[in-house]
Amino acid sequence: MGLSTHVLDTMHGCPAAGMAVALYTTQEERATLVKRLVLNSDGRNPEGPLFDNASLKVGTYRLVFDVAAYFKARGVVLPEPSFLDRVSIDFGVADAQSHYHVPLLVSPWSYSTYRGS
Picture 1 (cartoon, helix red, strand yellow):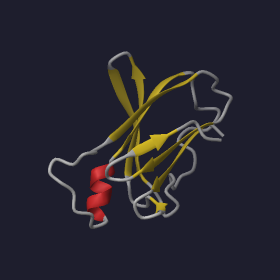
Picture 2: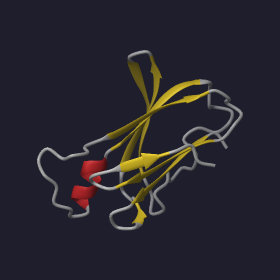
Picture 3: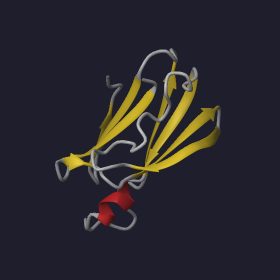
């Protein structure tokens, strides 16, 4: 299945539909943009996996979630600057044949992630 992500808005108790996400490959301090997307009504990439098994490579990656813009668009009044603006998750892929799922549970003030299934 490759690489996938899913974002849940823990403030409103729903998927983070409309949140902008960027995927990068990383090498040391350099990040190269692979794609930008906007999450669908289920809080997932509307096109399916970010990478399928054939395209996923061993290496390091970064997902950047535009948290503040998402909550502002939902009408949440945030301080300026926001406590969380963008959430970046740097992670590694050691086995390109395995499924890597990177979920994000997020509110304007906290987030958590894990390697999902």
